[in-house]
Image (cartoon, rainbow, N blue to C red; front, side, top):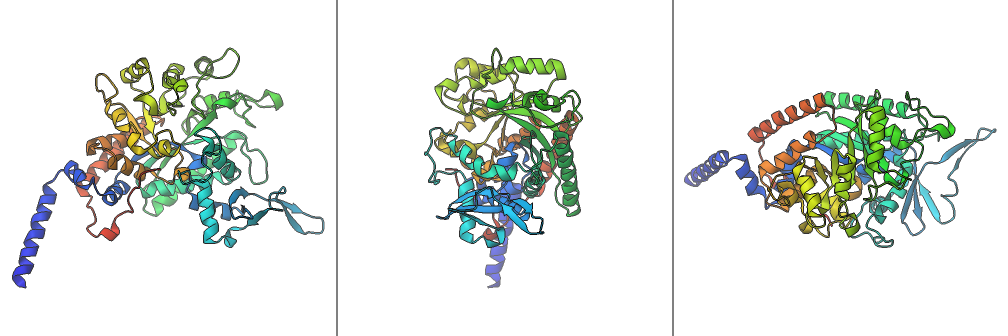
Length: 494
């Protein structure tokens, strides 16, 4: 028995020495076929930042249930058990001191409203199914268009996520998740215009931004006290392309006065906030969201013209544009239009490999505009039929370019709550479905910071800290030998 023990010890020691002799690149290649090991790796790796995520769709379904309960929302279900909406009741105090709740008719007849402590596991599962976008969704395909699910799901979410008193809790939840998987930077797309508080009053934009910045600072202090990594959070004002001329709500910002019909448009306020105002180090840019059209349906106007006019008035601002998120022929050169309009970053850029003209491809390959890809988003919105059909490897490596020039690409979650994902899962999915090297995976993480809209000094610090952290990670990280300690693994998005 002693001889057997000595032999086993020698074998184990030899294996350990062999493992130590491997480079991290080689260790990564050995893990590639095991999704649990990959997932464990990426949950521990410094992932950089998530620069394409929408605040209203980013928080997980379970966290939303908790947040809604804490804020005294009711959960509305049909008599068949289908989840319909988060409902904030209006509190009515009668002269005799009695209190009643007005649900606007939404919790009567064929609708059942429950408080959080009355939710069963079945109710909670119905809420998850109403929020997640997957091929298993029984409502998928009821309307024409690949983005019909978005319309339905945000109809469920908006009453909760648009509440200015709830927004800080949404950000806190995202910061907790980011800290847990070593995401050091979040760039959250949000709509600061016309947000209302729990009493139904419109909150001035500067009040909302001040409150959010204070809440983020407080949350980072709490993370630091708990010995957890802190998270730099910046905001990006999102602009729905079809609603640019809507007024921007109440604000007291200099030069952007607002009185009745004299309110500045959302477009004007977004550009001002992201360029000249005292919030420009916090609200660091703006983003065109919505369907892929870039040309604006306004008389004698284009995105390019309006950006130039606002730049002349307020100065440069960081501009992101959702582009290339459709393989429809009519949107084939949407990316070229976005670049011509002045985009500083492209969101999605999915159709670069097959649908765009050679001129558009050359334009991208000759430039250095950062691009952000959401794998789960593209598949679950049926932009890419399956993950195997997604051209992300060719875009990352520059195989689409005549000169084979690697392109500045980062991975992101888009709407993590809707797609039931996080950044570690997106990295795991990318690695499991490609032959990308460890060096290329690292570059994806670093590029998320290089392509961010963080102010230059903060960006340099974020990159320097990531480079330090990734060196320490490669030197010290050890894969658990007990399989029960491995992460769950990353299923392909469907």
